[in-house]
Length: 346
Image 1 (cartoon, one colour):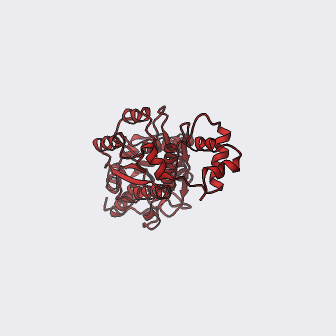
Image 2 (image 1 turned 60 degrees about the vertical axis):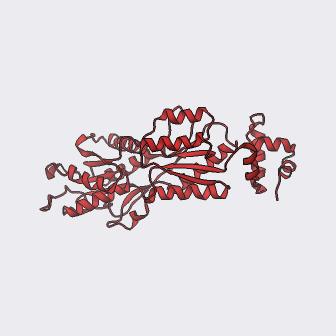
C-alpha cells in the first residue's frame, strides 16, 4: 500500500510537505504541490479517507441537488456523479427539488447541519444570495450547468450559446430564413443562453429577430406540442420553415404535433433539438440535435467538488464543456427548401 512517505521519497521532500500539499496548505508552493500530486497519481496513492474524514469531522457524503430524476437527461447526470463519488469513497445523497424554490432552499440547509461534506447544485429558483452565503461560510460547492457571476463558486457548464448558434447556422445554411424558436423557461440559465445563441446566429446571417417566431416552453414534451399550435396560428404564408427547440423533449413534442396536423418533418418544416438524449436517435424522424456531454459534466462536477473538499483546489474554477451538432433526419439536410403547405388538418 502506497503511503505519504513513498510519495515523499519519490519527490525528494519531507513527508510533512507531502501531507500539506495533499491537503492544499497555502504554505506549499504551486510547483511543489503539482509535483506531489503528479507523484501521487503515478504511484496510485489512495488516502485513507475514513480516517481523514473522522479527523476533520467529515461524513464522507456529497449532496447532489437536481430538479428531477425521471427524465433521461437528469438520470445521466446522476450516473456521472455517482461513478466518481463511489470510486472516491464518498456516499451520494440525492435531493430532488422539482424546480421548487422551497425545496431548493431546504436542500441547501442540509449542508449547514453537516449532513454532507459538499454539494453539487442544479438549482432553478433559489436566489443567488442563498448560495453565496454558503460559499462565504467556506462550504465546498460546485454549480452544475450554470454559474453565478462574481460569486467565486466553482462551476461546470456547457457552452449553450455556442451550441445553439451552431444549430441555427446549420438551418440557415440549409436555406431557412424563417426559423422559429421554442425556448425554455425564463428562470433557467441554459434556456437564456440558448436564446442568446439563436439570436447571435440570426444576427450573423443578417436575418431579423421576430418575436412572433418565438414561443416560450418549459422543457417538457407537452410544451413543444403546444408551441406548434401557437406558431401555426398565423397564415400559412407566415409559418416558419424550421424550428429550433431548446431541448429534445420540446423538439419531439413539436414533431408529434406537426405530424398530427399533416405537416411532414423535414419536408414541410425542419426541426432541431438540443441535448441528444437517448431517444433522439430512434425517434421518427431521427432528431438532429446539439449533443452536450451530459455524463461528462456530472463526472467533472464530482471530481471538482472532491478536489475542493480535499483541499487540492485553491482558486475558483470554471470548466466549460463543448457541444457537438449531430445531424440526423429531422433537419432535412441536403433537401431543397420551400414554404410549408397549409394542410386540411390544421
